[in-house]
Image (cartoon, rainbow, N blue to C red; front, top):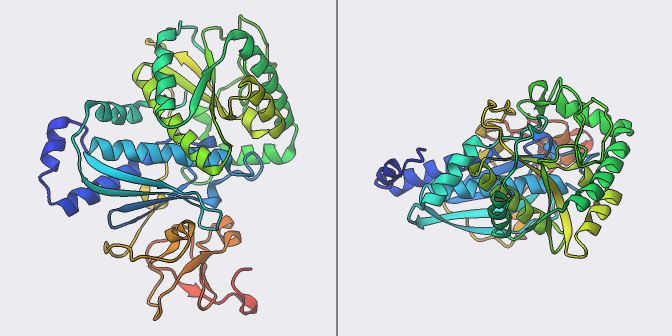
Length: 415
């Protein structure tokens, strides 16, 4: 999809069905560029008719660093915002229902597209920023950051229902101590190290994780320590270290899955605004991953809310080339398209289970409602369970075509 205003107007003349389908395809592809913890890309989309359903993929979550899937949900919120930016830039009105469920479906939100809207220049600018945005883990170049550039970034986060507190120097030093404690707690844990090695550096799951090219070659002095990715170094708390950086805490009033989704949308909005203003953003999630240190960060908010993420802001060096980008999954690996574009019939199921309704699961004679065998999902298999029979699909995860259900050993679904 072009982001040029003239071409977007021409696209509106295409029959509504084709234009809408293209917009939904573009939205899912754009969502794939969203930032995520360790580039796990934990989102899963289902497209049927004029609806996109967003869910959390348990196979791409971090059991050790993110056991409650807090940061994975924040990541999915960022993908949701990216998708909405794409649809707005294409001139489509959207209605969003955010309803994170507690069931195995992992349902987070539903996006319904209906009707055309004027294409605003701001939407085009945000879409362009998505193509430019990346995580720069290189040492701070020392370029002075204009404080006036931070105000629009704070406002962008607020527009999505979360808040961004910019820290004063003394608060940054307090944050540094919490970050250092969290860093040492995690790096001393063998399970955490094993999980990090799986997602960063060498062998990674497909087009996910952090390849060696995007990782720092050595630990750099910094006010607030970041992941060292195997390069242990000392955190030096002092004004001389990356003094050109500014630090902020992204937070909200409550600490529930709905708030985590909103935080991800706020992260995306703030980051895209920063990109437009030539401000680099580096998320520092380690402090949030350790519960005790998350409480220490919360104290810096002085009772204002719950922290979701720590962010470092620096000015982009105009003389430096862009840093390397992380790999991305194809849309075929993150989206499931229903076999028909017919509207979804009403259902009495709880909203968190609607994501699994009307799946193309083979030529089954009766209406079926699949569930999910999460153990098989973690093993890389499809794991959908046909509840009326108990048969389970053991094809590989994100397989093409219909599910193939079989009865597993012992006459019981699962293993």
